[in-house]
Image (tube, helix red, strand yellow):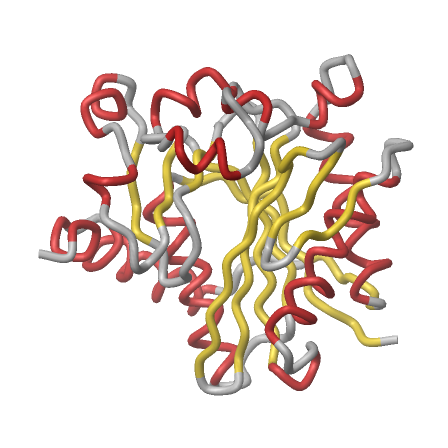
Length: 253
C-alpha cells in the first residue's frame, strides 16, 4: 500500500492557505515532496473564488469588508466558496498524475470518495455528483476544484460540518435563477452541513478523524503524519505576500 504524507490541522489566513497549496504543487513537480493530503482551516473566515470568476459578480464585498472576511482567487477553477473559520474544513490533495485516474471526472470521484467515506463514519450515506460535488440528503455538503500542471494534480475542496449558512448566503451573491435550476427556493434547500444532517453539533475533532480515515480508505493509502517543509513555507510566504494578497491577482487588474 502506498504511503502518503498527511498534514493537519493547519490554520492560516486565506492568502497563506492558497499559497501553501501552490507551493506544494511546485515542489511536487520537482519531486521534492511526497503525495500529500493536507487538512486545514481558514482564520479569519474567507471566500475563495475560482480562477475564471469575477469577484464583483460573485462576492458581497461590502459585507466581507465589514465582517473581516478575506477574499482570495484560487489557481483552480470552480465556483466561489465560503470558508467558515468555525464550521468548515478544507482538504487538499497534491499528487503525481500517475497516482490518480487520468479522466477528470473519475479523478474527482476518486478523491471526493474521501469525503463520502468520511460521512459514512457518521452513519450517513453521501454520494459523489459530477462534476465535483458531494451530496447528502439531496443537498450539497462539499464542492471541489482541480488544476493540473507538469504532471501534478492539485485538488482541494470544502467540507461543511457546521458552516453558518446564513452568513454564507449574505457573503456570496447567490443568483436566484441558479437555485431554481437546482429545484431550490432558498440556499438552505440547496446546501447542508453535517451538524444539520445529524441533528446535533459536530465537533471539529470528530470531523478530522473521519476525514483521515475516509481518505485513507478511498485513496487506498497509508498516511504518515508530517509537517510542511521549510522550503514549502518559504515559497508559500513569498506567494502569499506577492501574489495572493495582491489586488492585481485577486481582481485581475
